[in-house]
Amino acid sequence: MPQSLAKVYLHVIFSTKDRAPFVSPKIKPTLEAYLVSVAFNLGIYTEEIYINPDHLHWLCTLPRTLTIADMIQKVKIPSSNKMTEIGPKEFHWQKGYGAFSVSQSKLEIVKKYIQNQEIHHQHMSFQEEYIKFLEEYGIDYDTKYVWD
Image 1 (cartoon, rainbow, N blue to C red):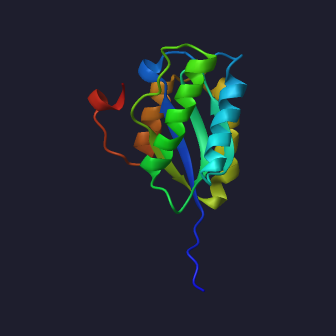
Image 2 (image 1 turned 180 degrees about the vertical axis):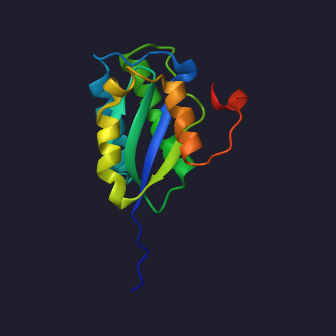
């Protein structure tokens, strides 16, 4: 019987609404674990995750049965609901996201990048970092529509 097989890695980045620093160090582990659990139940495997106070980096697989947009929506909605239970009631993720392909040969580099977020953001803001990703991947953008 024929099979459809795929292994697609994505580095997903999105922020809190208006980049508000809603994710405290106390809430961070619970939110990360919850997001990984929701993803796993959708057939998404997390290679690395780091949630900053105002944004997240998530290295994961894309299941062949979901589009990127569906995957993000199916993770954002329940994790946002979880945050309103355990954290600020006014919590929301931004509407947009960035999803960047990662080759098998670059997995360890991206994992280390995500693991070093705390140090990395001592030298660069989230906005600077995100624009850098867009430019490195050759993505056309208009700054009027990048942030919400």
